[in-house]
Length: 244
Image (cartoon, rainbow, N blue to C red; front, top):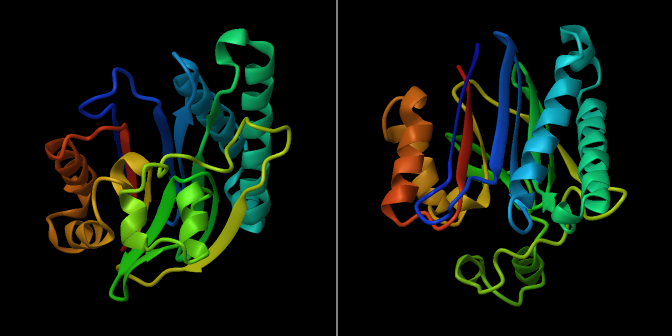
């Protein structure tokens, strides 16, 4: 069995929520989900993330169960390309949306075999007996600095350029996502989240809350409450998937 829950909130400071997410249990052992974090002036960030989710979910729901299972990586790549094309065209053709974009992290979970795709700095974490492992790599300025050894992971959390991303949907005519294949164990969790959560809570806090903080069903709400209690300067979105 696979169980899944999701939540999104504008946070304690922002006037609107520019995050969007999608979550669907196709059957007991097959789940699709994604999280987007929009960026852009005025309403453009909201337009970018909601448009990406609309296009991505429409494509995923057009597929039958066997189609999803046969080539999940290809489907996730298609999700990225279709969403990027829609956001890019909107940004080019609508002056109010010029320069907008959105991150995306998405998963097709077939039993304990997962395919994950990401672009930007929305993340996927694997949580279980082995601890917490960040599956995805952020496409961001600070991630590049960390990878070059110029700053530590701890310094990255407080870096003044931590919100600057180097890739997103809608910025260019062709997207450059990363694709990951993950095999989960029974009892493991997958967390998809926007940076409004990962910038507010540490990895160890996420680990503790997911494994020991209470029931999995209430976990997303608990994570949101923790972020809000710390001022939640950004929108917060979390999707939790449990391999029961």
